[in-house]
Image (cartoon, rainbow, N blue to C red; front, top):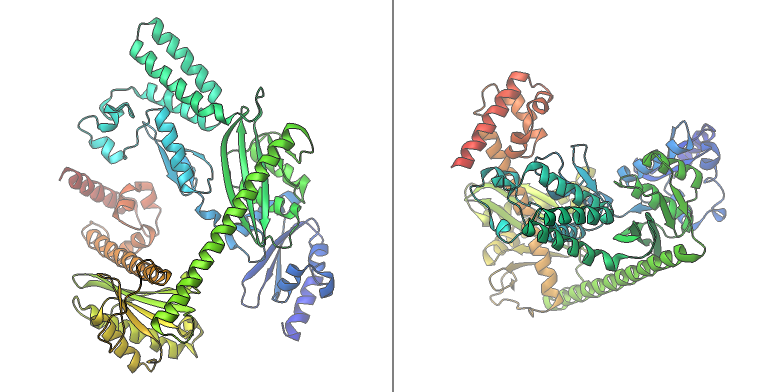
Length: 623
């Protein structure tokens, strides 16, 4: 930080008010480095501007990059707590403790907004009439839950389109996994009663479900409906088989979450045990990053605020390894979310402490397993890079590998991908995609030459144009997805661009052989070698990236052509629709009200789009 900026920042700090709020430390380029909250903003912000030896190492490192500070005033400390959690999730500041990839955590969705509800995986919760459970750290955990529930309850799992067009009961009905609501073999009221039991089960109220099933089984037996009674008996047995191993607090009706963690350098591996009606109904694992040098109270604060901010259920009791640093504000906030009391406790003795110790043991096991995986992956990558260096005769290990691939359909919508692996790992911020401009028809050779020429032309311009700075980096190895043909054109383009000194090889998929320019003999790597596995990973990623881009363009082209035929939709409205929806299916699902609210759309135009696409979908289904 230069002297002028330092003086300006010092002056700004003096003006920070003595009220509750949130503060943001920013770098010189405007990037948010840290988001914090305070009861008294002035005191908290000033505490960072002490002599370096009085600051914690992590804070000292951050302050070297701080060029600006902004603040947002709130009415109360609780509001500051909520705002901090929201901003951390949105901005993901480097120096904050944050849930790792929390945007990807899936939910289990119970679709009450449908006549015959289903269980689905959802990437985010919404106010759409469905009930959401989660978040879960892995999609597999949601799939396992759905699979378990479908063993107990005959829940339909077909799409709405298949449901509406079904002409007869499917195989799921014949093997007892569905009641065929598509053929009205079960009434809507009976089906929804079953789904209420599914909901109770997910809430941890399996005792209530079992009692209800017992009552219905006895009633069915009294009415001599023995087949129905047998089905209900089987459901009861399945529930008992699932629940018995889950008893962790026998003889109680306790409902609580137990949270503990184990730290490994900059990560905290958090485990949550969900106990409902005395039974363990779920166990989840999460990872917090940015914890190095942080206290247990800070870790507790970060996890509780970020996790429960989006959680669909907050129990009346939370057992935790350490109490959050802002305990009072956190308690008020949790109570406001639950709309009733919440007890946040750090147990010292008894069954609560034993349960928390069990959770912590699981957290330590998760940490150790993660460290083993990380070390194993690091060893694998190191072996792959060293193997490539020796096999290809490179001067050093290839730290930056670039791979290129071409994708088109009979020459239309030709595109190319450039993927980058840095130190053996995908570096997605460096990926680039190209539309082929100069080549007509399906000519992968000329297309590859164009892309390579443009890539290294950008490298020259990047020296003076900051917008292209990522192209300024020089690769240690270039890989071409293809055989001698694509490689030859790529090598010639690199020579003309003045970068003939960069090693370039082609990887042909048929035999997984490597080809070198001007060499008649292929380089054959061991099929089980880490070097070949790394190259295959790079090549497959380039292929995936190119195919994805090509499909996007093709979908967009098809969407444009269909919208051209809709009455009342001109170029401007077509542009709005293309920006607002990814494909035709999404537009067809939109309501007239949704379409009408788009910029420049009238009610008449919205009805026209909806009517045209709905009729087209029906015709397509009939065909």
